[in-house]
Amino acid sequence: MGSLSIKTAHKQQQTLTPRLQHAVRLLQLSSLDFAQEVQSVLDKNPFLEVAEDDEAGLAPTGPAQTAIEPAAPIESLEGFQTPATLPGDEAPLSPASDADATMGDEAAGAIDDFEREPWQSSSTSSRPSGDGETSIIDLMADHASLRQHLHTQLHVMHLCERDLLVASVIVESLDDDGYLREDLDALRSLCDLDPPPDMTDMLRGLQHVQMLEPAGVGARSVAETLLIQLHQQPCQPHHELAREIVERHMERLVRHDVCGLARELGCTVQEVEAACNCIRRLDPRPGWRLGSTVVQYITPDVIVRKIRGEWTVSLSSSIVPRVRLNQMYADLFQRHRDGKHSELAAHLQEARWTIRNVEQRFATILQVSEAIVRRQKNFLEYGALAMRPMALKEIAEEVGLHESTVSRVTNNKYMSTPVGVFELKYFFSRAMATATGGTCSATAIRGVIQTMIDEEVPSAPLSDAEIARRLARQGLNVARRTVTKYRQAMRIAPVEHRRRVA
Image 1 (cartoon, rainbow, N blue to C red):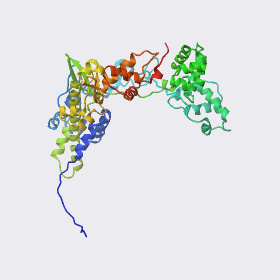
Image 2: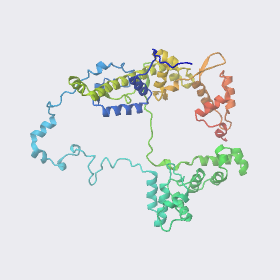
Image 3: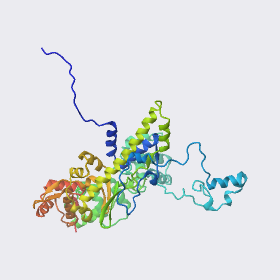
Image 4: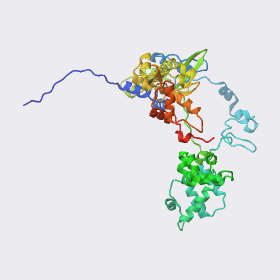
């Protein structure tokens, strides 16, 4: 019978230190998330402060700049200039303070606001404007929301109090697209009326809402919003046919089955196509016309320019945090350091780690971007058709990093080029064999497919099988399902939806 025993053994294993784990996590963040992370550390760490461009040691990214200097070591950061005065020292008086001291209170009070010139007045933007004057607040654009716009129209209509309340409840139930997704029966309980409204009152209130601008608001389906817009438009040729298509043949319209619609309606294909063109000019989301929708723009991390015939890469100055070590606080802490200030010591160490991580992050992004540009010059010169296949391993070997590190660097990082803004991962694609024995990138094949579709005849668009056959004639052996996958990735409609009658 076996016996229990305790044994000790020595073994070695690699583990990530907390500092390295934190650096890896920061490296894969996007520019916006990284800026928020640095700002949160800046708000709670007394040893970090915001620095200007010249103080932070960051090279400006002007039109003629090619790249920033390599990241400076932490010793040079600790040698930054400290403020001119320490706490307790007297700061030199500015010319404005000297003048105020010389004039005295009586002289300063003698100047009245009405005696000043307009350019001499202070805080004019915050003061209310007088008669005939316009303040800067009056010039600000007023982005009224959809509900505010509809409530304004309801209050100028001659409605009784009961109908106005019912219509207001319906307006508050609309979504951002302008649709009424809630059931009218469920909205009855929200109307504080005595007696409670019935379905007739709710339908009458919905009718009042559907009469408002923008046309089509208050609809309960796409077909209903299209019909509302068609009814409010002046009568034009093919409008009656367009109404019939929307009312009874919405499924064929979605599939763009022009021939099937012509058979069902007993008219020519040209008439159906003209009616479909009338429908395409309508707005399926009327609520988008109003409201202050926040558009999230992409801020590129690196900028690529061609200067004197050479492609150069530089970091975007808008993504580099203006942060530095407060040398004055660090020196004071080092002079009076003892065991009672362990929390401040942790803050100082965190500040140094943050600065190192900032330097390492942007130096790595710049190195990887430069390696990508060196390998993809033909893409910058000639477009997607000249994209060469490239793997993460190639860039990792060139810059001396691990593939996982390169993957983190290229994730959520963007490059601004003369031909557009692309994510760094866009430049990586697997190699596909050609009939001549060479290789071609998937991006180049997508470019060929895009060119074929752009040049196709609208009345006879190319199917995925036909595109695959044409690619094979060019020496690119691509399966039909692969063509479908690439077409869907480029958000191109299928052949039935692209067909147009001449």
